[in-house]
Picture: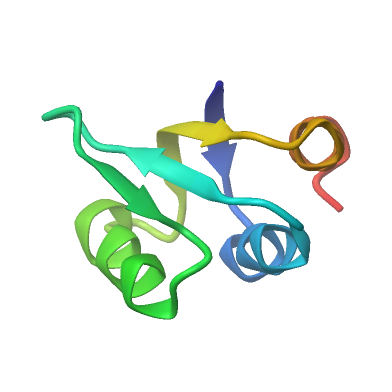
Length: 78
């Protein structure tokens, strides 16, 4: 799933931390980084955090509950 225009980075990673299954960031090169890992979160931030927001990320979540949680965040930003 594509996630766009994330302006509340802290809330986004809080949602990721609350997920029960694996959530992966798919890089432009096709690599997958486990976003539940703090190190991967910092790498993701370093690569896309230039003006205080994340324009677009491609994520893969494996648990239905996690997908719903991420969709809720995209719509409500909560």
